[in-house]
Image (cartoon, rainbow, N blue to C red; front, side, top):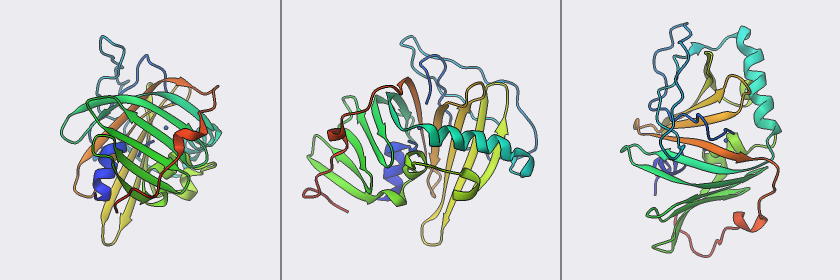
Amino acid sequence: MALGRLAAVVGVMLIAAPIMAVAQGVPLPQPAPKNRNPLIRPPTPIQTDAAGRPIPVRPGESVPYDGSQRALVDRVSHYLSSLQNLIGDFVQIGPDGARTVGKFYIQKPGKVRFEYEPPSPIDVIADGSSVVVRDRKLATQDLYPLSQTPLRYLLADQIDLARDTNLTAVSQDNTFVTVTIEERQIFVGTHRLVLMFAAKDMQLRQWTVTDPQGYETTVAVYNLDTTHKPDPGLFTISYENRSQ
């Protein structure tokens, strides 16, 4: 399995990305912003379906990152660094438009678990050093270094986005704060991670990962619980059954 498929499974995340929000009004974007004209869009409407799950929306236009926006970036960095334990639900839209849902668990630093509801047979687990994409039906798993996935930005114990990432754009409207991170690798290409936060309280609402081929995966999170610590056993990886 290529890293592109890993990005398609977990989005960057990122989860990655990964990554938060409440059930009322978690958005799901489509492509990362490509037009970086210096403008602020009107508030983006927040919509949910009959079950209270997120409905896709498009991120706001991005503004070129400059020094005047450092305070905004610092607020986002402080929020991400303050998260230590998180349990919630997620909705994902893959590159083909397929919609999947599930439960996720985060324990910093470096640990996350995404459990996809049937018919999807997938679990994604990070134990602090590695990430596996596990297929429950086939009883197989693919292993990657956590450092090579967008998940690391959301799972870092402390992060300064301006210092620790290639932050290429920042924007804000009355509804969302959006930051764009790009990773350029000579032999792989460029990955883009777009994180969208609620403008009111800076909670992460969603993220979109775009792989070097242009395939995009979006994940939105909701029904969040920061008061309970996940069971450590949720983040256990068996290294005996793997493929790379």
